[in-house]
Image (cartoon, rainbow, N blue to C red; front, side, top):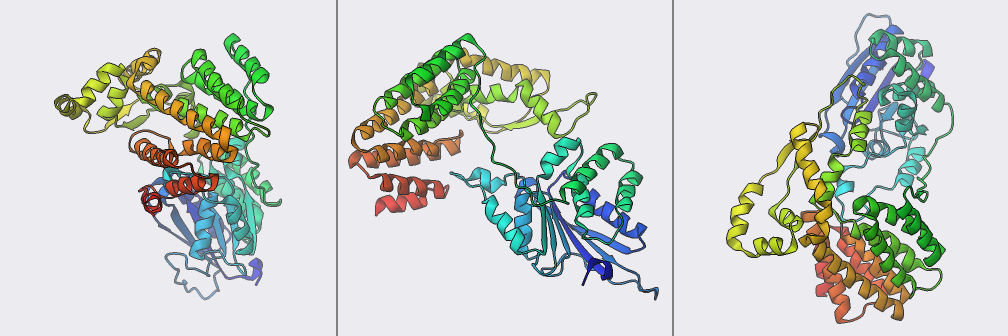
Length: 489
């Protein structure tokens, strides 16, 4: 049955909090009523933010002339949805899993950009869902798939994603209504009319073309902006193989931002020692350039404080919420530094003494037993965090610095030893750095898994495949159960 001859149409909108899914549902109903149809909209709330979306359900019916009012459903049913609109690629995937989209009936309209779910971010390893598989399934399990990067369209138009989705719906031809009626719905709402019309037009035009999948981001090597940076960049060109240079340039830039040029020079000292033992195609050195920089830029309280008060961060937040120049934005963070992290920021001798003393730890730990909501845009907390961030000049004397440098040197010793014996095993040891990330419980859990693997390797040298298998098991869950069972066997 063609859209023009259908007497009943069902539409499901899957959107995250703050994306205007309710406004979009209202616009669709306004369009239908303006065209003489009957319309009803309902919503089924999801969990907060990225653990689940709200499903807005709109059902439309063409009057049959009898004066009778049809009975509308309250929520979408699998196999009985004509149009699905998803504000993000994983939400399109959820619609497919729920059976809302069917090959014989449904027009699936979805953005191809990603907003990572809580579960994806919490994964010990790379927990991201496979975007390519979702796009492939979207083609197979819909009558037509209209897909493009709606987040990018939102940025181009200075609009909101609901307006872009509305335009894509109009451009898809899935509803038998005039395009002008869609535009009138935006105009009659009286809210940000001009920007919403720009977003609508962008979405409308994108829906006319083929599915557009965003290209993978290309991270070009950074250009040095200081004399010391240029000296280090020249050193990279002179002493490191071509395969490692781009990663090394990123590493130097990161560590100069994290600490200073001398720290970046130490990074190159360590990297050159690996390169001296490596052979073409220099895969170990290339990977070490990335993972060594990540480890040396470990997250301590100094780094966290520094990132929280950067002007670029405040600007990014204002951009994300589309704050106007005359609007005041307040940013409130939840921060929970433990006594362990505080002591690690202190000079090594003082930090060790406090942590070694049961009485001192108990007394001081009372002040850090609960987290705090910190308004980083207030003068008071900005100055507090600025003071913590300024302790960067003392970082080399801190307990955490001493501990991390010892761990890094031990790791590099293992890698260099394996380079003399088995280059593939050395590469897998380099990649074990993936286990160490974040701070607090996440850091401690990853570090414990890393130490289990390298301790086991120290007892009896493992092959590349065995190291990789143990690392993958450690990354597979956040309880270390699979790794412990494998090591016990």
